[in-house]
Length: 108
Length: 213
Image 1 (cartoon, helix red, strand yellow):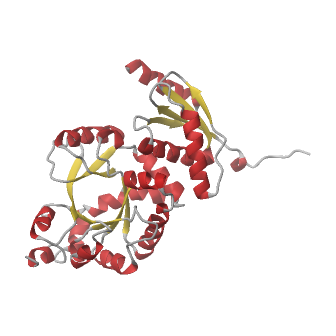
Image 2 (cartoon, chains in turn green, blue):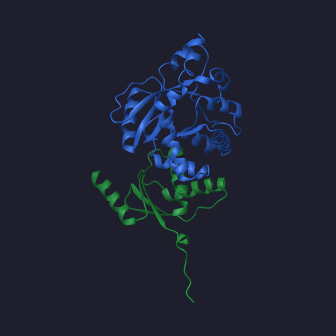
Image 3 (cartoon, rainbow over the protein chains, first blue to last red):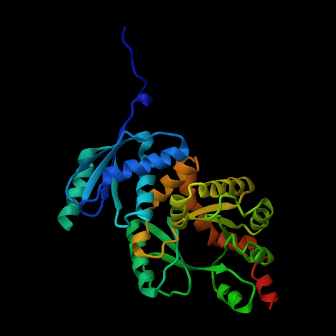
């Protein structure tokens, strides 16, 4: 018997490209903030990972349902800890995000 | 077209912020205070805070397209309520300070509830309960028909954030749909300075400020 998964149950990936100061512990800080805001909303947002493209630009990988929580966490970090953090791009395609990042890196 | 309200400290800050706001995708920018800068493609307008009933405070309000009142000076603001265009949400207390009566008065003036994001987040990181008062006030505002506006109230260039971060913030914390929270940074601020609203209010506003001299 074949079992089909309904299309809306498939969780799509979202990649958030973030510019930050050199050596900034983005994964730890984002996880900590997500824990705080998750506590406020009685939800959990732990499944994120960070890909470091270079020293200043990283990509946060999150699921579609938790991308707004991740963006909120970055906003909170920007206002409370590190005002240099900026969100450069957001996409469901890692290749596109890498292209955007490399274009920004070349400009610098 | 996305809109934001800023509170710069100096003219230099203001011109830099106007430039950055353009690159972030904003088309309309409300500037709190007396700063005159070249706005370029961005439309700018003056915002004033009604914080007293004396002559000097009232003079500050002249020429402003948007007059806001703080929750701390709510009583004063109530006396000139028909000319106040917006109330700043209670971001520094666990209990709402704006009640149904003030919101109904504000609705008569087609007013707005302004949520200052930078102040709210800083307070929230110290005491998370402050979010509750803003949430309750927002619910009341939506129920009564007062237009909620989400703005950064940034005082420095680096405090400006892209509109999509503001949208996800309100979507996440206030349990709104994306279209609803988008209206907080797009449609409502645009309506507040539109001709349509001015025509609706013609003859109601301004008169009361001048009469109290």
